[in-house]
Length: 184
Image (cartoon, rainbow, N blue to C red; front, side, top):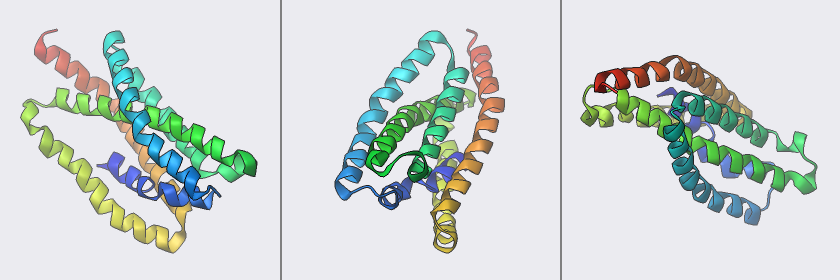
């Protein structure tokens, strides 16, 4: 719930945030077009590597931290890069963020499925993520309208921090339960 709620604070507004950073429409289009092309193969590669090395918890934590850190760069590109390098700085941060975001989601989804007694109940559990996005989107939109886009980043960082803490405390236990239940 909270993970999706924190992402609802920034993901729908990325193109607007890019425009505020001074990027042109063409540059925003390039970044927007690259995002899905980066996330699909990286999700597969990181997931396969985590499976191969049996380092799911480590991969989750590392990918989540890198994703949030690279999004922090996107939030303040004018402070980090001279105007002529803003596009490349934002592009680099988005490339890193996208390559880390989906693998983390896949590892969390796998941990959720592993923790269920009956995998067919996954849809009911996953529905709460959608509810988190849906409920928070309208509330966050109102907050952004009143306080500006900085509020969205604050909500994202706060939600991401709580999500990371919960992920660190819960994900390993769920994967351990899966292993014990299946007798491997």
